[in-house]
Image 1 (cartoon, rainbow, N blue to C red):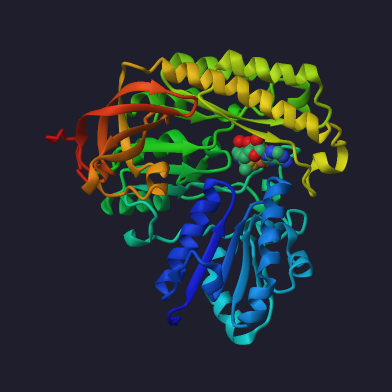
Image 2 (tube, helix red, strand yellow):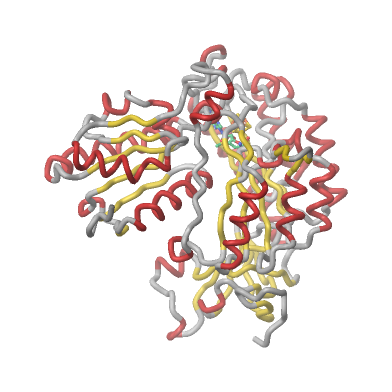
Amino acid sequence: MTEHNSKLFIETVGCQMNMLDSELVVAALRKQGYELTADVAEADTVLFNTCSVREHAEHKIYSALGRLKFSKQARPQQVIGVMGCMAQKDQELIFQRAPHVDLVVGTGQLGEIPRLIGEARTDRKRTVAVSLDRRDGTRNEVSQSFQSYDPLREPEMRPSPFQAFVRIMFGCDKFCTYCVVPMTRGPEQSRSPADILHECRVLADQGVLEVTLLGQTVNSYKYVENGRTWRLADLLAAMHDIPGLVRLKFVTNYPRDMTDELLQAVRHLPKCSRYLHVPAQSGCDDLLKKMKRGYTIGEYREMHGRIRATLPDAGVSSDFIVGFCGESDEAHNKSLDLIREFRFKNSFIFKYSPRPGTKAFDLLPDDVPEDVKRARNHEMLAVQNQISAEDNVAFIGRTVEVLVEGPSRNAEKRGETDATAGPVQLTGRTSCDRIVVFPGNPRLAGSLARIQIEDGTATTLLGSIVTREYQHGSSALLPILA
Ligand code: SAM
Ligand code: SF4
């Protein structure tokens, strides 16, 4: 079935898992003849890929849906779909709040989207396609109702020719008391190594240099097959042998599952990025217990010590929640101390947002006032930014290896994307995930370059090219002449 000249508008909010889901859905629809448009007014199919982790992300989508009410009246043939976490969580409620929506498709039904859009257009009936609630079946039944959606993609359908996300796990069983993900993405399930490695080989053949493995707790990966247990370290070792790949990354790590075996794998496999995102969430044991994170600060410190001992130059980053239930000034200060002690490369800091369906929502009062949450958020960011800036400034004078991604966002905003008028500002990342900007020719995108660092801010290193070393798509890391 081919749609003719159908225009698709898609808005994606949330994490990298959502970005990957959108990429896969867009690829499937483009295969059917859909064309992407950035103008919602000219779209005959509008999709929102949604996030439920914080209330704010949901408000954003409900407001966007509200604005579409009149455009739908003007274009009754338009199909409006809500997919992802909010679809799984709110289900029919979405029709009550936005009656002009046609489709609600959960995280476990994404493969159905092309068919459902076609049916919505011809039958003009509303559809909800979601997985079982975690309490509505056995673990097996619920798991089966969440279908992982990982079709192979054609190269021209990928947003970057040389970087790709690959899902290795979906769902989560950790049930941190504040978090809605175990409900919206279902039980923790690991994909088979054969599927993952096949996908990585295909991507490498298509010219992908950098693969980022995705999982809510990616280092909890476990797959048992023919009596052999595969862990993340085994996957990385197998991926390391794939010709063409030059960088392997993985996010997000769960502190308790940071094994020595994994750290040794990262140390001994040169393609592994020296970057570990291991969210601490809080610096206070009482709060960690209320969050049900499963570790104490002492245990986090022990884990962090093992990272530093095994990978002294790794960039370690964290997430923090400020203003969680019962968080006192003293508890907040302990989180600040933790940032000072571990000197994270960067931290993502979130104000606690109570989420219906979670333990914290049902059992713990949201008792930290909004203005206190805001002040703590600012204070924590200021402490983190100062550390990030100090550690970035320490790079001045060093030469780092960068995978060049292309023109920086600023260059793109200024419309500087070709080099006819001289070098443009390019951006890339080091193995330890530091962002580097430098002048150069956009043709360098997809190559590894050595950059001399001349300045640094809290978020960025600035420098200039010393040599361009490795060419995009080369099967070995062969130096080429600049
Ligand atoms: N699975 C990852 C982990 O455990 O680190 C990340 C999952 S979540 C999508 C990303 C971050 O959102 C979490 O690390 C946490 O800091 C934050 N988060 C989750 N639930 C939240 C809530 N109810 N309010 C505020 N922040 C929240
Ligand atoms: Fe949410 Fe905790 Fe699972 Fe991360 S580990 S997705 S924070 S429940």
